Every structure is written in structure tokens, then in C-alpha cells.
Length: 103
Image (cartoon, rainbow, N blue to C red; front, side, top):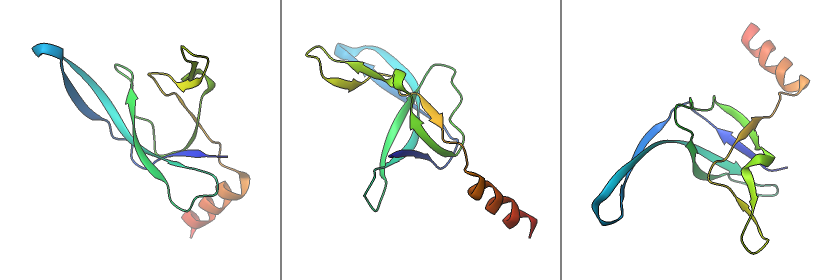
């Protein structure tokens, strides 16, 4: 299963000028990467955050089903907002982290 990786819980403000010198659009983004099955290295990308949404905490995530839409011609697409769901730590991973912190 592919997973989304967030390394730091930092939002980056971004501003885009509207067409024909129209009003600017301001929003926050967060850096992330997708680790695809069978590939050796993750691919970086940006996630646009909702207004007032805090950045996602560092960790591993999957993409929530609400992030997908059916396009005009019946094809599956990502919507404007990508919603992430944390991947729970497995018992082996959690206990390894506790024993490392106990040392």
C-alpha cells in the first residue's frame, strides 16, 4: 500500500495573484511525499490545507476516500482538498520506539 509521509508539522503560506490583476488568493500548504509500492524513493509534493487547518503532525498517512471525485468524463481524480488519515503504529513499531526511548 502506498503511503503519504509528513516529516514536519509546518505550514507554508502561499499567495497567488488573480487573473488580470484580480484579488490575491492566500492559503497554506504543507510539504509531504508519497512512497509508492515497489519504489525505492518517495516523491515530494504539497498538500493544500483548509482555511484555519493546522498542519498535519509528522507521521505516515493514507488518503481518505473523500479526497477522490469522479471527473466530468467518468474518470477518477483527486479533489481540490486532500484529506489524510493517520496510519496507526503497529505493535512492533510502537514497542520498538518505547524500548529505544527507555534506553
